Image 1: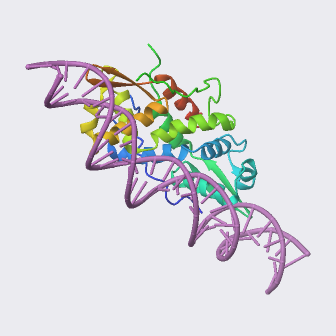
Image 2 (image 1 turned 90 degrees about the horizontal axis):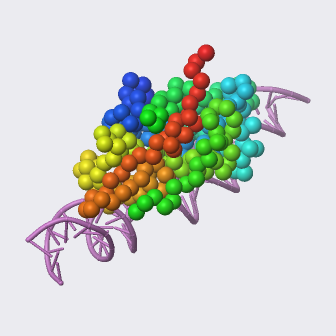
Length: 117
Length: 117
DNA sequence: TGTCTGTTTCGACGGACGTCGAGTCAGGCG
DNA sequence: CGCCTGACTCGACGTCCGTCGAAACAGACA
């Protein structure tokens, strides 16, 4: 279950949208991360995972927080995983998710604009 | 053409994903902004607009930068507009787009995570 | 007024997405 | 081993999205 397909995000590229145009190849990877966050359910899942006290949270705590079936939550979690935003680890019966801070920081940096002069 | 439908983004809410769970109503608005950035073409458009020297850029400079038809670019610009990410203004024959820094800052703040301890 | 250029709207097509129910896999426990 | 529970996969359905060509709209200019 370890995260096989975390897309390679070139951290050296694209410190900010406002600095210069994002190259097409970088745009593809970065857009896929934004797309993963572009659903209300996934954004809340991401938030619940990132704000978990212990740094991780069980799927069994995520599922009942939504009015959706288990398979649907599982599908959204897979989307977050494939976008490289979270990591999953099975421990016994339960599966725990945790955020990947590096990519979150990169996305934040990309959106950072200089404060109004 | 002024931006009629800039969604109300409650800036008081949700300083960071990692702090507490994003409420459902906020998630809907914020997710729509991320969704707008979740397409490679729109992300590049956003970047070109935000990094424009004069703070604004003409559609006539955006269109030839992609291998897409005019209507398609126009459609993507409308999506960015409706997400509240950019503003458009017609001056004579040409239409100029500029970024809205406030919402970009809010999205950046949402994704900001504390640096590794 | 007529025409030309730049931009947007409209309608359509194909593919991707969100959701579900049913079934499957993994691990714990009697 | 057999059964139960938690999580995931699979297949299907309806909807939304990205793209295009054709048409409409807005200004500039002769």
